Length: 264
Image (tube, rainbow, N blue to C red; front, side, top):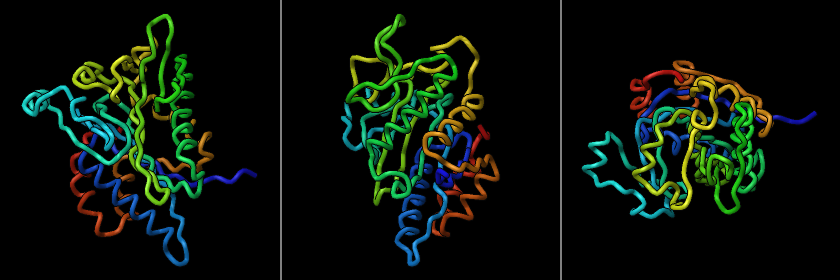
């Protein structure tokens, strides 16, 4: 019998970026402390699924000039900017984009970041295939891509960037489902000037949404990570996080939970 790892999916709706970043830091630290405990504890891994309002994030190895907007222009656009601690360069987050932040202890999967990233890519590739879209990988460029094909050269449909401490991950993937791609015009996406971006609704004729794509993505995550999934949404997800995290992290939850706009 193949062993499985418990993963609790907390689907949070639309939440602001900064407080979600702080929440991830608390969750990562809680998982690290669990495996340092005597006896060692193995709580479920957690996957945060959500959307963000208009946000640009720059990874620790990125170049600041890849953001093509001034501070005033950012304000006029209604967007925020954050220089953060994941790998990779600059990307955009916004409504219609399915964002996943796996808080996974890779000691219980595989202590190989390459394997982890390729597996995340595979989840998105299989999800795209459900909609008749052929996702692929590009050597040397993390994420999931479409093309080259009759519609044009390679274009990224899902960006990825992670941070790992003591083999516990944070940050993750941003899958363009119905994302307004115009917002990518204000950056050099992922620092790549010679390729574009796309979304699932651009690549195929059927109506899609974050709500309809999420079940397919979770089904493929179960298969690729051999996960035993518990899926919580809305108030149930917030209650789980409040019970799971130490009291010191509740301030971060308090800034998030009252502001979530919807359960995606």
